[in-house]
Image 1 (cartoon, rainbow, N blue to C red):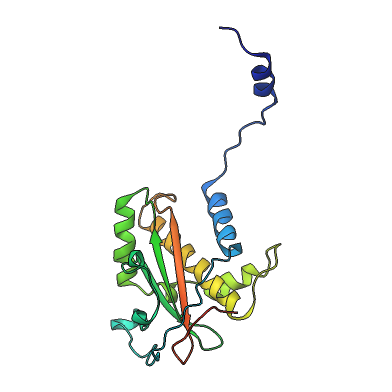
Image 2: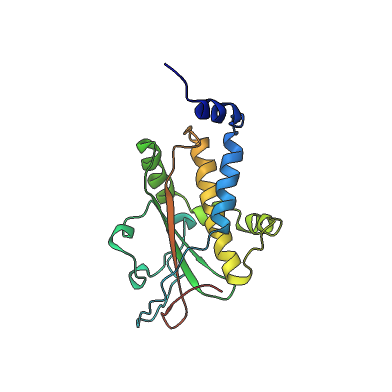
Length: 193
């Protein structure tokens, strides 16, 4: 079969294929997530958020947030991971993490079990992640928004590290998406600034 001269020229001009280490890919993904600014709805709830940090799970496994006050969609009612924390300004937040397309269903089930048994916020090095964000080339958010971004990145980083420790491939948990809502003392849903 005759080869088209343009196809032959394109084939010879293609750059050499390079393999990228899994750790480098994970680092690029973490950097991209930290740079992304997901949109947050500015919906308001009239209910008062009280005792947001009052309920501790057994053994200090985590802090419960009055999640019924946040406008979660139906798909967000059963997250793989739920992390509650307080921003430097005092806003109470909850981050819910979902896997849209887990390459390894066993890893997805492991994640649900691991998150139910462990306090991912306590396991995550948020301050360390925040410090690394300050060294990145692109300007990073500061204040509450910076802390919020650091929590999101540090929690997912912890999930990936713990999954590898449990014997799962580094790409077993893919399609991660998270949503975070924060509430002020009046129960209004607010976006960290």
